[in-house]
Image 1: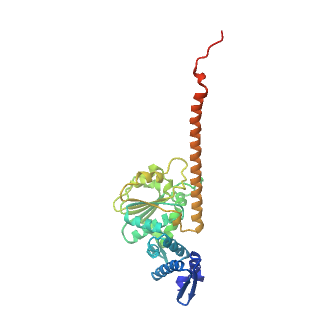
Image 2: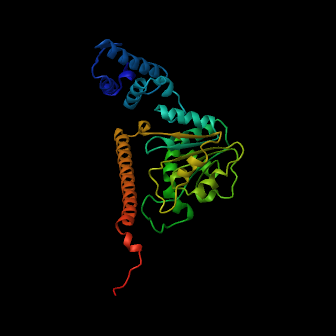
Image 3: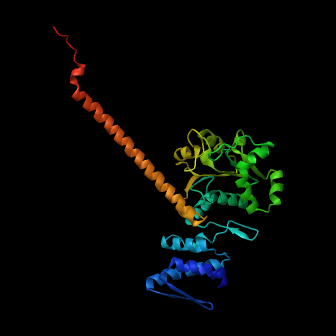
Length: 340
């Protein structure tokens, strides 16, 4: 019961927030629900799922209660089936998918050779891909992990960076190092990197290589050019699995088209290649992040619609001018006669 209610009854308050028309009373080891039959039935389903996850060893958080209620309202799979599958356990923390979209993304990585995880910030694209990579290494399904990303600044030029080559590329690859240190013992990571079991490198270092028996993760793929994307995908060797992650709404390339945007059209019909599209419903950061993503998406859609209307109006005006000019000035095409 203590685990079900959470510290300072945080989970209980989240349960009441999800079903405000239901009265929730806790008496010893019993939970009493009061209200209309339909409301109590819905709240009972949520409580049953939370009890099932608690019994399976899941350390519940308020976000788990919110996601469970959302899954039950959508009539999808049971929350205990989606949120109960652990990918990795490390230093007392369990990494698992927290939304239906994340569960489908993780399953796609398990079943396909190349998977593209496309979605907004905070949906766990890179984090879950790296968790699957560490899991595959621990199971000895692969011999090494290769993490890479293009060295592109986010809208500003950093200029000259001092130090060795590793010092220069470290700022671009720092997010990958941070995730590795969360999933593995920080003392083990340098040793694995020294032996080549884990490699973190910029995308430019991939040319000319054939990657066998590896789990390869390409992060921030929206900042690859079409040529870079083709180069990376053709590094695929035997026994290798690739995961490509990116957000096509956050392209930092100064010029040219994004390789991630193009590849969704070029490779969409090829077997053993899967495209997982995550949405704001899969954001597992602060609840404001999902609303920020939705607000920007709505703004972008409105701006595209307004641009389309302006272009149509401009084309219509040009057509009217051309036709109107031919009718109003027919004498302009006639030879002029002088006065006698």
